[in-house]
Structure formats: C-alpha cells, structure tokens
Image (cartoon, rainbow, N blue to C red):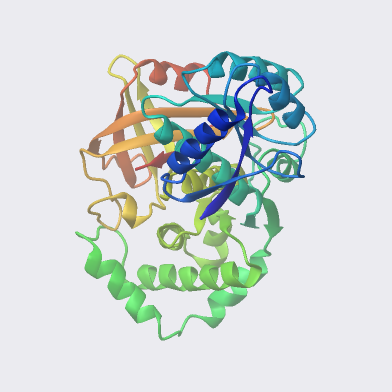
Length: 382
C-alpha cells in the first residue's frame, strides 16, 4: 500500500467545525480507493513527494500556494462543487504552475475516485521506474535519434533508470557453462508442448534458446537489474543463436527485455509495466495503411502472456485490444499512444516471424505515425 499525504487547506473566515467535518468525510472517501492509504498531514511539516491539497472552500488558494511553493511536489488539488472550492483550486493551480511546480486539479464529482487513482498509479509507477536498473549487453549499432547527450545520461536524467553495462563475455561464458544444465530439457519441453506448432526451429535451436534464457536469467539476478537490453545480432556470430525465446520468457516473468541493445525501448517497457501491470510486445511497423487505419507490426520476442495461442513463430489471436506506445524526442519527453484492435496474424516471409495487423480506433493516429514518428520500435500492450 502506498501512503499519500492529504493537506486540507481552507479560508480563515469560514467556520472551522464545518470545514473539518468536510475534510473527515473526504478522507473516508479517499480511503476507499484500492492500493493507497491516505493520511492527513498538518501542512507545516517537511512532507516530500506527491501531496493532495484538499481545497475545502473559497479563499483557500493562499494557504495552498504557501504550502506548495516551498515544497518539491507534485501536487493534486482536490476540489469539490460547493463553497467556491473549485475557483480557489484554479487560482492555486495557475500560481503553482507559474512557478514551475507540477500540479493538476481533480474535481470531486462523477467518477472522480477512478480519475484520482489513475493519477496516483502513474505517480507511483514513475517512482518505481526512477529506482530501476537496466542491464545492457551490446550497444545499438546506430543511434535512433540525434540526441543532444549520450543516451545513457538522457535516460537517467529524464526517466531515472540507471544503465548497467554487462559485458558480452559474461553472457558468452555463462552460455558455455550451461550447455549441459539439467534444466534445459524441461525448458525445451515447455516450448514445444505449449506451442500450436513449429515451423523452422529444430531440437538444437530450441536447446540453444533455452541455454541463452538460463544465461540471461542468471545475469539478471547477479547484476540485480529490472530490465535488459540485448543486442541479439552480437550473439549470432559467436553463439549461433538469437535471444528471442529468452527475451520473451523474461518479459513474461516480469523482467522487461528489449532487443537491439535498445535502452530507450527498455525504459518504455518499464514505464508500461509499472503503469499497466502488463508486459509489452516490442514491435517494428512494417506497413501503415492510412486509408484503412491499419498498421502491420513484426518482431520476435513476445511474452506468451500477450497472446492467446502461439506457434514457435507467432503468438497473436484476434480480436484483442492493444495500445501502441513509444517514447522519444530530443529529451525523451515526447510520447506516442494509440488505441487499436487486433485484425489478423501474418506470416509474410519478408518480415520477422511474429506479425500482427492492428486497426486504429482513431484514424488520425495512423497519419501521426507517419508524419511525426518518434522512432521505429513501438510497444504493443494488451
């Protein structure tokens, strides 16, 4: 349970007994929100992190601003429809934003507790992402954007995760030591038995894939990372295998795993996991049909929890709903999201073997993907 401070603010000319009774009623309502505990704070302490400023009445903007301007925030101004609470919240919001504070207003009517819970979930997700560690095995061969600073520094500055370099030699060494591990037979059996069918891979390829999973799993534990970004192309010349199964299985286990050494996408996967509680499918747009509002995506390492059925090449089954997600821009502060519905699987031999065609709920999102792309790799979240 995450604890959230609630700071009641009010005008000195209002009846205090009435206002405190109102505050107590709000605290009771707040504490029905699942996953959070709301505790009153006196307003004169050194509270850090997010605070809910409970705007009890008109003329509350002055104490709200006095509280907020000397604390880091962010702040949620919770207003109600009575006693000029909302106008006071707007005044305080304008001032706090004007001095660079992060603040929003939530109005306590309608489905306000759902809206508030979503904000709090995003906030706590941000805290988790900032404390995360991403292990990188092999760098990207080509920068995905003309970033002003090294990507490791930008990821740390903007989103918080620490990038941990894991030498390729550590992976290669583990791969050699684990070739005869007794767990391999069970992993190979799991792959084949759960699949609807196999196309290309033979027994030797499945065994190598299982060895790579065990090697990566051990490195994740040893380096204490929450996500990994692996350049699979570095594996082919030496290990004669890719990390597709390993990355898919790690994702299903809650360790976000990106291919291509792409730490930006690994960061986005962490964000998606913390906000939604679900793993994401790292994908490459192969074709965008603006007229039909369709996008075809392809890639390999898909967590099996993302699809309903799979072959040892393709896991999607319509008619599921998915969200497309991407972070990017020169400061990694731009976000692309789009709601979609799965239309069909694909088995085009010109693309990577995991393929899906999605239909945009908003056709303008297809145009945006072409006119304002943040990059190539996009996440698909079920």
